Amino acid sequence: MVRDVFQENQLSGLIGSLGVGHVRYPTAGSSSITEAQPFYVNSPYGIVFAHNGNLTNAEELRVFLDKIAHRHINTDSDSELLLNVFANNLQKTGKFRINQEDIFTAIKDLYRQVHGGYACVAMVAGYGIIGFRDPHGIRPLVIGRRKTAAGFDYMMASESVVLDSLGFTDVEDVKPGEAIIITQQQQQFQRRVLAVSDQIAPCIFEYVYFARQDSIMDGISVYKARLSMGEALARQVKKSFGDAMDIDVVIPVPDTSRVAAIQLSRDLNIPYREGFNKNRYVGRTFIMPGQQTRRKNVRRKLNAMALEFHGKNVLLVDDSIVRGTTSKEIIQMAREAGAKKVYFASCAPAIRYPNVYGIDMPTRAELVAHGLRDDQVADAIGADNVIYQDLTDLVESVRKFNPEIKKFDTSVFDKCYVTGDVDEDYLASLEGVRSEDSRGRYSFDSDCVGLYNSFQR
Image 1 (cartoon, rainbow, N blue to C red):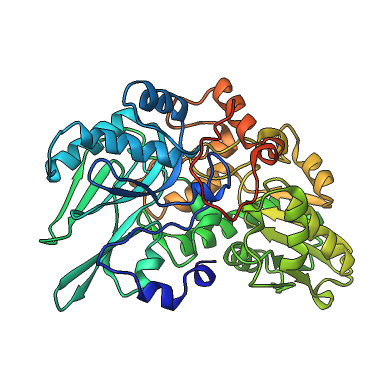
Image 2 (image 1 turned 180 degrees about the vertical axis):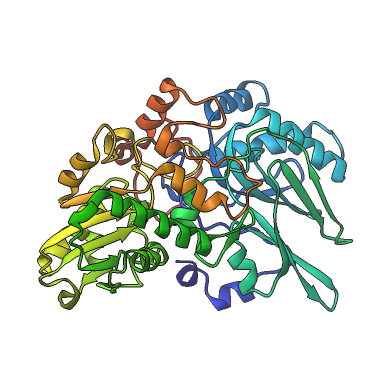
């Protein structure tokens, strides 16, 4: 997508030595073009802002910004709220020019005001680049530098692989509750931990699905974590089948489950085969809007090779089962390709609750596993058997590579929300916004970018 939108002639025409970019889909608000990031405010100082995550007290912040700070919000995006909280804190200084202490103070105050999961990068016109991460470390953020003739280039991103590919070194994580300031003129680099939480809890779904396998996040290799997930899942498969093991072949659902599937097949001593050919020109169906769109694009994205399915009992391995739409379609494709039995193994436990920290999980009613037993999920997606990863095993598969992390955000599996401010009323409100019927009611396609407030209640 980035390759198609930003072409060489566009990038070469950009002026200056600072920049902020954003390629993530929205999780709060809508998919309207007006909510594309980065956001910008011209007062105070001119701030460009990009945000990965989701705020859990967005309603409270919206009221504060309107009635107390008197800052107008143009969209339903919580990213715009976050930007305006930061801008308002800077404006309190009343200074013609700000310094590093003013910025650190503004972010420290923001940590007290804002709840949820967020990793942010910002640019203050004529001053420099800023990055900070929520006190729980839910969403990832890394920083690195690259030696040049004039000194050092600095870069921050969600994943280390971005920095690796561009020749940046000394890559390290921005700590939970930490803020980093890099000034434009003197290239001064300062970092400071401004908020300390007794519950550091990186999102475990980053390791299961989102991150690229060659990334390192919070000191943990995503590749090694997925190998370990495969080992643990193999134990679950053995436990589920016992002496009645009749699997002929292990086939991954490309791409994120491939590493785990390889390790699983090795531990089970069952042949591993590539049974699905992937079309690289179709994006991730997980984040596509609408059941019909997702179902149609699964067929466009994957093609089952009958050679690997015909007459065999197949164990399909995927990273997770969310709505069940993709899984059901893939299982049907395997049967159409001639599979006798189709078993389905998930590297993640059953997802029964929505994510509120920046992953566009559907409502509980749209989650296939919500309120169902494992055998009922198997019936719902058309599998002969479904094997889920054990939650304790999943956590240990990741944690063992960095024992300093005692906890992960596993709320989609166990309903334990680390920020402590998520209750049934909040979930009900969130589901009203996220439901596909609601999104369809307020969304529209437009070639024009306008300023408007489509906030609906």
